[in-house]
Length: 452
Image (cartoon, rainbow, N blue to C red; front, side, top):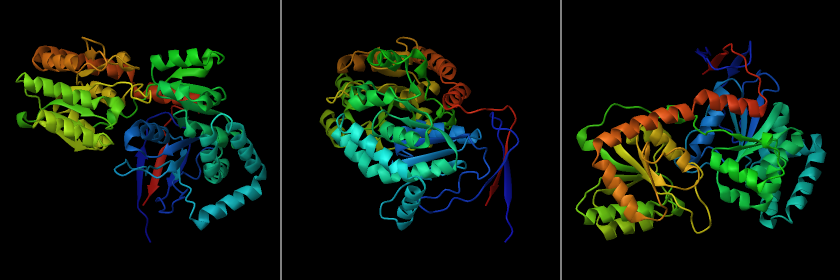
């Protein structure tokens, strides 16, 4: 059977003088043939994640894809199945490993791993025992996941993985530490929210990481305060903005399609979407009609629907979850992006919402609250407005002020786009990741041949 070939040239820095042959991805749950078989040894990275890919964590997918496109293959273990409506993880140079406990093939791989690396099992049990006094629930979850982590580590050993990375200082970080311990290689963690540091095992894990990455200066200051014994060289600010230039950029929207206010977020308490609906209700009482679309899914949907009915907001729509490539279309139609973030009843809060970054990047002014890392992006009076937390009346006043001032809205949008392009440069972010992972780049391009 004759094979067709398609050649793609990448201009990003990649290892020198290699031709990758990428075969069609197998449908097996533990498919491993998407990693280029002759990729340079010692230039691979492993990501240990709770769920991959995830619609609410597109920044992780973008990070993985950017590394793979630059010629650095990535092995990913997804401890949970992808949720409905999530992005596709099918990408040349990205291996996704899922350990399914009902699969005979997975258990045979585990048996082979134990025969070849018997000390790993004892080391894993020792890590579980060490974790139990800090968090019995984490130790139990780790024990359940251990067969999958052992099998994944064996695959990483065959692929000569040189570094293990994860996002969020929780079960993912503990699992990454285990895999790195088996492989005797360094690992790094990016934590995103300050409540993660309240978890005792998280601080224990961060002290053992080679690098602790943060997405905002706010998180950096708090991490240094909570972990005073860690040298400053261990910390690094890495903006999670790799996916921003992937947003589609359709033409200007027709007048009848224009949205006054847009919010894109998971429907959870810390996003403060109930405050947005209340603010819109207050504006409606003043006779000021606002067309609003709230995009996202989550447990707060029923409550938000009830609030919309109570305020009789006929022009406010909950449109459900939107794929990342559809966010650009919504942003091209909107005048103002509003996300009144707060600290929820569990102490959770946003560090640096990606949706706000996307809006600013596309030149849409943002109204939000002075919390977490948001003030680092939304400059009050320059790229948007910052409101006090839990103040629906102030939020309503800010929305009305900006929607009634087209000149101010336009100038804020231009400054928002300029500042975000400077702050979240794709190449700088990729270079920071490569340096953290110890990857060696070259200025020559690599030729990638795909077989179909």
